[in-house]
Length: 170
Image 1 (cartoon, rainbow, N blue to C red):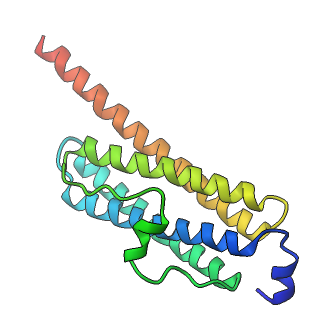
Image 2 (image 1 turned 180 degrees about the horizontal axis):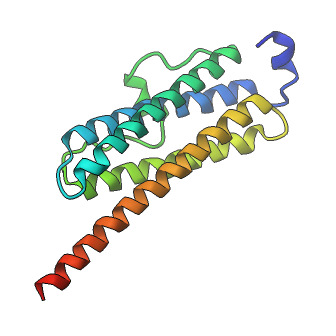
């Protein structure tokens, strides 16, 4: 993006770059959380959920690519070291120390809800001012909302399966 393009944005570009670097950090953490969680996960519906978690991981990686490209377009420098991801991001990282499928899903659900807040904030910050970043943020926000719904559905399916098993035992 050229200098004039940056000048007419109508937003504090340095603040926006800061927000985008936090989002970039969170995308990398989300990518790894999905990827490693899918690999170590155990329990019911694992064979159905694992490939979908890997799809989510790839989508998080694609989000990172979009965000880093926007940071560079805005004249910023993307976060350069993994050590800074935890420092810059608000979503954190939950190591899958409990590999049970519900624990993995709960961790990912928390991450998605945090990402929803992040991209909602970026969308609000740029609305009517920086159309390119706003469009990117809303596109990613839609993906995160879809991820949240899918995870909630899997958790509900597992709960129903458990309830059905209890009924069979009675």
